[in-house]
Length: 207
Image 1 (cartoon, rainbow, N blue to C red):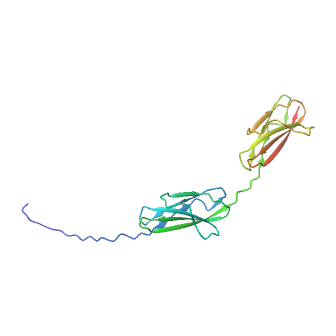
Image 2 (spheres, rainbow, N blue to C red):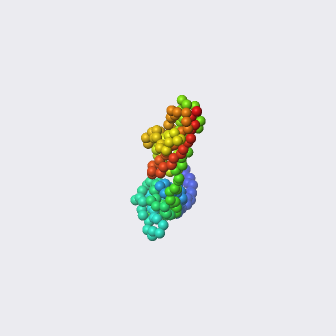
């Protein structure tokens, strides 16, 4: 208040901005798949200068050039379904705001689709019944190609020809009451989506 003054001084050192390398930490969902399955590349960047942009590439084994699966994008993931049962090379290219780029590569082996045999695991509720009782056939399939369709048959054991109890159906069970006290044969025929068929047979004694 009386005009006296005092000054204190400080030195502050200002460093230049650190030069941080752009690092590509991208990942891929699998390195071995079956034909028909999809792989997903997930872009992940560290360092450099945000924001980042991405581009996704692919090439089949033996090819010298990559095909760009996308243009430059801000999407941090991209999914792709390989067309052939071979090995593919994939790449994720990252660019930062200052034009630095870093690319990461992946190998993905695509196996042929497994050839699964159609199996008929159908069952029947009983193999011995009393006249007037009912038997039930339950269709059960594994392998092949879903969806499945079914057809149910019956014949007296002494007959050569089968009688279709149903048309082709998606019903997984069918019940039937035999008319006579004899031995019958029953059958469940299963067809898959590609036309493969397999039939299972049962013998039922009616007392």
